[in-house]
Image (cartoon, rainbow, N blue to C red; front, side, top):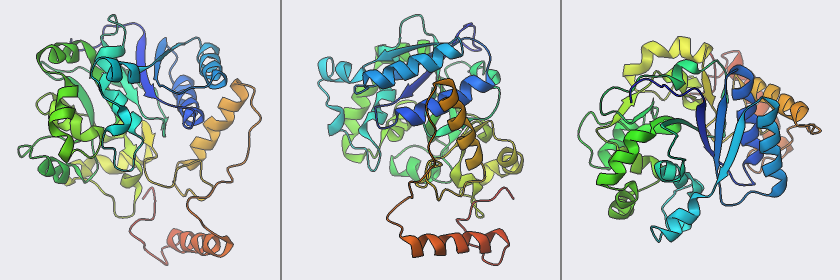
Length: 324
């Protein structure tokens, strides 16, 4: 399957109760900017009745559909794997649920778009849903900032191998199922467990000859917005226009947009979709009061002053986030 022929576009996300609110804000941004049938699959093992109802309500408000799936059971019952035993570094082990996509999605789903919950869809993305995957390509995703070559080398992959950021992944599920018949992605986890840091390592190893790279506008991570961007030189020609007109904004640094001290240039968009989500689901909005880390009043004041000095180029911290 090359170009997409499915009328309904399939989106997969992972969430438990602790991330459900963020997931629904992401979905609200997707639905607001894309007016065609979308089927959402929420992969989870821990979702309250209240959050389940909110997911369903939000989808119905936009005339879309949603289904809750439980991949942890497949991992336990079919493969004898406890998700909590897998190496996840600083991430939640449920990121490994991405690997169950061909096993758990209904057979009629031929392709899907996986989206992390800490992002905002800032554009009409039908072009991404319909992106043509040539020949044996199974995954289309963006380069993982400036770390790709280092991680590919760490995993022993050949020169030129791709290491992607799995927060936005277009998956040809039909082709992935065919790969599973030859060798399961779970076997890759088992064989390489000692060297794995997270699910992105597994994806790089399993799909090493079946990945194609997308333009970076489809996954504009926080690292691209630094004064000194963390980016592979081959993508620098795309950087200026993609920073100012990102199709998908991925808030993947530590200071998320739901923290009061988030200084991301597009943090205001996150608040916009938060308020829209509250209005659609009849939820009373609250101010973003949580600060990243244990910052006291003096530390927050110093942080604010540093941001102000950077804004006027009096300081030039490399990690300062800017559209320039």
